Image 1 (cartoon, rainbow, N blue to C red):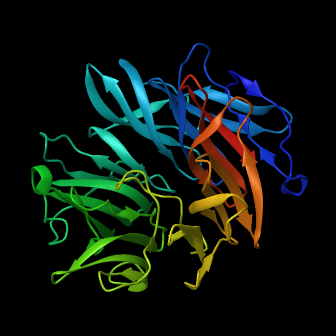
Image 2 (cartoon, rainbow, N blue to C red):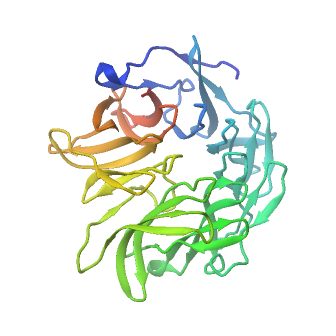
Length: 387
């Protein structure tokens, strides 16, 4: 990777108490930079005010930043995610039109992909691409690295609406697609699991009148966790479900709340159609139950994560294999804090001096936590913690 800027410095280990993150380098003069994804090897991807970026930490050099090359004629770009090899994909602006794009492993070249944008990036390079359409309708295809395309339509579950958007890709034959139907306040969005041409509607939905459903990123084997309101023949419930085995697969109801009772448990997401990194590669996942952070083992056993002193509510926002969870907690004074929970031990996390954590991007199995942080001026920057 070409070296444009570097940040050095050691990160304290959890045994040393509070772990403080380090800022990733940003282009000079930029107001805000945001990270959106992290590869298993620790390559971070994001955007700096319309300029696609990538970061990696090299031994002895610290964090290095690389601007990704724009295609000929492109004036701006946005990164959606990275593959396991660190290849980025997203969209660029060419002749005032948005085009989907894929960057090479080196980041020095890019290839336009037919479609308006890459909404999701799979671990092996398969993209979920929105095809050219007239609003509000939209279609999506899965596009392999060699350019071959698989339209995501023509099943009863995918045909139940006018907009199909890919939120995550688990592999060449696995994706989660959101299907939107209705107009105005009657609009609904429902997630559909797609696996090698077969589909399964996940029985939760988002609507104007009820809170949005949350769905994790789908794993390559078709495992996915979701939560939200379910309308089962007129009976409304709030469900937390883990699904394994692709399509048709097996769904296990882990929690259900109805007007008659039950505990509300589920995932925490900022946007209904944004995939969550709450599901670890080993099948464990995190969320909350009764406003308290919780972790569910790969076998589905739920465990409450105890409050630290002064906390009044909490939730798990990211998980990695081995039962590691990033906890976001609100204290009694209204302040927000973050910590790592592992083996029953909470390790406080601190943002770099002058910054506060805005949102967590991902905790990798290698122990790299990436989050976006904000200062008092509202400037955003990515930061990293080694846990």
